[in-house]
Length: 305
Image 1 (cartoon, rainbow, N blue to C red):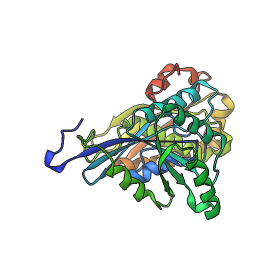
Image 2: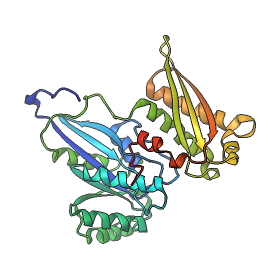
Image 3: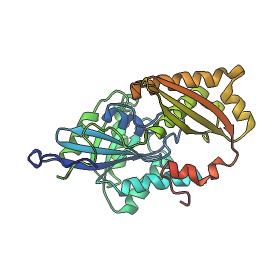
Image 4: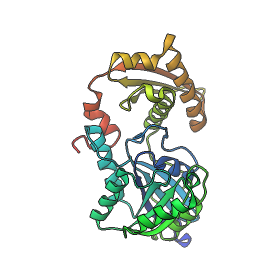
C-alpha cells in the first residue's frame, strides 16, 4: 500500500464495481477509463474470468474500478466461480455500476442481475452502453423500463468504445468518493500480477484468432519468466486444451496458428511492458484442467463456489 498523500490535498478514494451480462462491454469501459489495457476483451462471451482492478486518478481522487466476470445462469464449476466473484466484487465496492448493452436490451441475463441487486438491498448506478447502436426511441423505452425497477439512483448513457458519456460517469463517481487515503500508488494502473496479465493477453489473442473454432474452456499459464541483462524478458507459456483435436486447432497447419497467436501476443506485451519480449508458446492437452484447484487460486476464484 502506498503512503498516504499530503492531508492538505484532501485525497479521496472509492472502489467501483462494474457488473453486467457477458459482452456488455465492462472490460472495454474499464480499459478506457484507466487509459490502458488492464483487462482483456474479445467477441467471445465470458472472457473475463476474475475480478480485475483498474486504477484511475481524477484530480485528488483515486477510483479503483473492479472489472467483474459477466453474470449469467451458471452451469459448470468455473462458471459458478466466476459469477460468485462478480457478486463478491459488487459487495466490496462503495459504488456499483450496472452496465447494460443497450443494443441487446433486457435479455434474460440482465433480469438475473436485476434480481440480484434487488436482493442485495442496495442501489446501483445504471450505465447504458453502445448507445450509438440503437435508435433514440428504443433507447428511451429501455431507459424507462429499467428505471421502473426502482434500483438505480442515476442513469448514464455511454459508449465505452467511442468514449461518449464516459467522462460524465467518471466525474460523477469521483465527486461522490469519500475522503480517505489512496489505496495504490498514484502511477499504478492495475494490481494484476504481471505474469497473469501476460497469460491473459495470450488468451485474448487466441480467442481472436480461433473465433468459433475452439470452445470457451481454454487456459493460458505463464510457466517461466526470465529477465535478461539487456532489459528483455523471456516468457514461456502453456496453452491448455481439453482434447487432442483442440490441440491441433491451436497449432494450425505446420504450426502456423500458434505462431500467429504468439506474434500478436508478443507485440501487445512489448507495448505494455515497454521492453523486448521473447515469447515461447506450448500447447498441452489436460482433460481435467477445469477441475484443477490451482487454476482457480491463480485467478482468485472460489473453487467451491
